[in-house]
Amino acid sequence: MKALVVFCHPCKDSFNKGILDLVMGKLQAKGAEVRLHDLYGSGFSPVLTWDEWKGYLTCPDNLAPVAQEVQDLRWCDTLIFVYPTWWYGLPAMLKGWLDRVLLPDVAFMMPDAQNKNIRPGLRHIERLGVFTTCGASWFLTQVVGAPGKRTLTRGVGFLCKPWKKRAFAAHYRMDSSTPESRAKHLTRVGAKLDRLLR
Image (cartoon, rainbow, N blue to C red; front, side):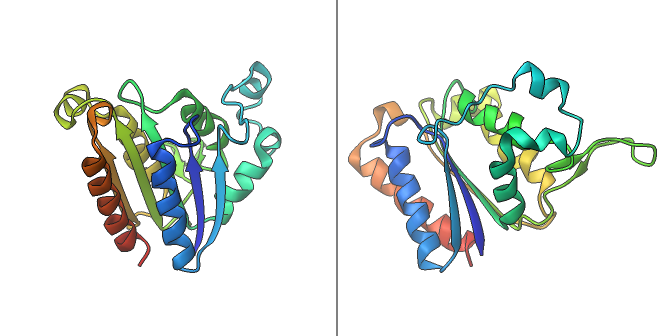
């Protein structure tokens, strides 16, 4: 198993870091090879610059600014995201990672003379895990449409292997969480990871 873990939180002692530690521990216990992208810790720039945007469709030159990230994405068979949900969606840092790394001829193929639609490019990814925290309740998140969850589980998920294994867990009402609710959530994440990593 070759796992790429994308972690996005600015606080080094956040609850999200606790989730990350659990993820990393489970992967190591399974003997997985692991590559971690700590977006804040590494100083990743989420900004898709004018020059990158102009060359977005110029493959493979478009890979140069994010060559290591693309190499790791192509290498993995397991992709896991750990992040907080802000304003019902992905933090700008994580959205920028998607914008800059999930490129044409990497994550998807653009339409061409034979194909009217984009085609998936991450079919080598057999497992997709999404673990997040939300300030809002489950109900309010659903009313808004859970755009962050949908971007990763449906949007990125569509690009992966069709019958991949998936795991999703969110701790809702994080701002009013308790030690008990956080412990319960870690237990839930652990159980989902056990199933994902079988």
